[in-house]
Image (cartoon, rainbow, N blue to C red; front, side, top):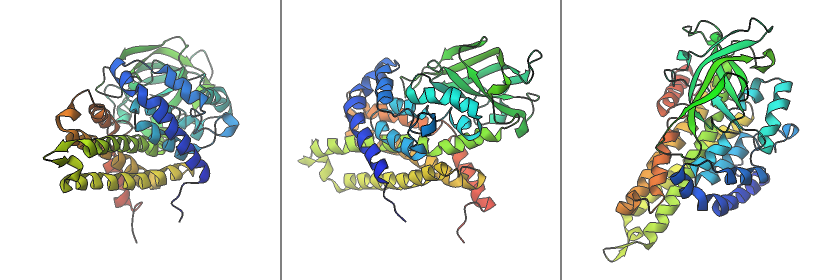
Length: 391
């Protein structure tokens, strides 16, 4: 078993590490303060070829896959989870298209993601249907005027990048809205320019500011047959897409934890107290050590999960391993950011230091794309079903 990254992945890691330190780090605090979309960083990522990491070369990407994207996100998230989210959005809405989309859909919508001419967002959650996905009420009914077409009506919420997106992956009920049968949900590609598509309110967030989160309003939107992703009644596609995203969200957690711990460690090496530096206290070193161990454990879980996703292993039997990475790494981000604030003491609570930003940003990771409680339940179900077993 070779635990070292392949040479091309190490080269990617080194180049993104330099870019993140030189370009992302100086902008991170201003993005958080202003809440404005960082177009300059989007253009930097575009020019560096980072928007197509998870896309195959045949569609204009680099073919680095989920692992390559996770590595890049880890480096960027050390300084800005907003910037890391921008990279994540190259895979979340495109995942269902990559998994089950037609060749025509892939040719029409994915090369633009890679070259930065198009942006996309993912619409699954609704005001009354977050973790309870089957509670969604967005409805798709057959278009009476177009064979195979559909008319969508409803509201999606908490959509990251909803304002900037040119197209959306949207899930809707193609049967009775009250149905909880998995074959009652279908995925569609919806273009921003179509009649009936609009952006509703955007949310005032505790953290991860700069990439907006808000509502997508669908009012009698006519979707042609060729924009149905996979089969009608393919709810499983939503789960496959989210399963394959677990290591990418986990990478945001690892990067945040690394950034917070590195900053706090540098601080305690300089800060004097009781005639010595804070780092000279054994209790402080032990807390730093425990966090460092957790970071390395999270990275191993995450890289394994990313390689599984790249191998197409994101179905039911693989879920416990994918969910472990997401759960462990994002909960670690909360612990590490909390430790960083504590190590800086009162200074860590002030806006003079980025520790308070990491602390605010971290909590989002335990909620998005499946809460920590959902991940624990998936892992537990996997153990009970024997998908995760040791004999």
